Length: 317
Image 1: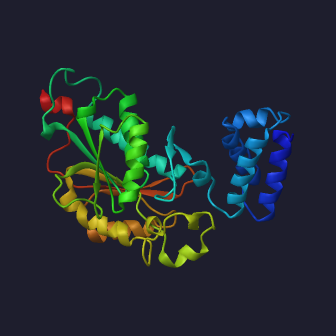
Image 2: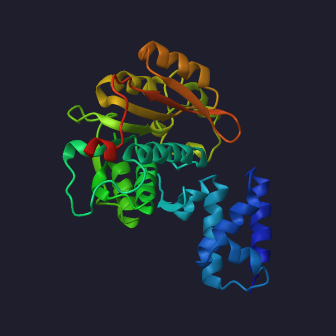
Image 3: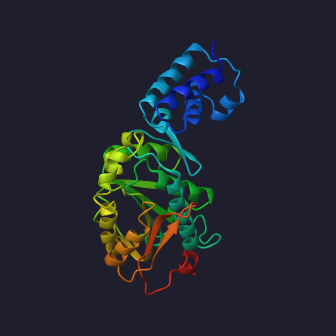
């Protein structure tokens, strides 16, 4: 009966031979999945024997990885902003860099709600007082769900914030719904099939979006694992900004005065995105946020407001 270390060593060698970038990590994750434990347990118990059934499941998973299928699809899950999301070929695999959109969104929402309790728990909230949020192109639901979970962790009343998750593809929305229910926030989110945003929606206080931003001509050069993901979730048109540009054109109608949009962009698109915003939304305050590596990753745009934004507590005083 082989040990965990023996199986990992052998699989890592096979994965390395075909050019997999993280062969040992992948092997450890796949063996942990096959056994039904976490990766730390597998690494810490290298001499533990592995039964025949678990070995077969592991070797099957390794064969899929040798075909350069993403580990996240093989495992069926991906960790994102402290939560585990189900993932499959219906939607893009959430990336760590997208977690910054969630952080910015939560800071913005908490700032608008105001510090501390502002409304008694038994007092109803008017529809006009709710902060409206949209996650455009939600895919697996990563952004919308992480925001909802973050608000729950901060003890924000569910009815204070209304979150709409949209996607053009019904299959992706089905996956997002499954993830929302799994994390206990299915009742905090609404879902809609839409090309960017439904036409009849009331303007939003906050829009977040991780839309396709890879130039069409660059798709063929992507790593094979990435090419397993839906092309529609990657292809951003000739310069990578075609779909983002369409959303920029919708913002005057989609954002309420003082509302902001937080949009993920490619690491080499900071200058181009800023120029595009200036053309589309002249006079709107905008900035480009960098990631931990100092690369431009997020465009933040605000619809000008003649009145300074106020918190919910201030509006009700």
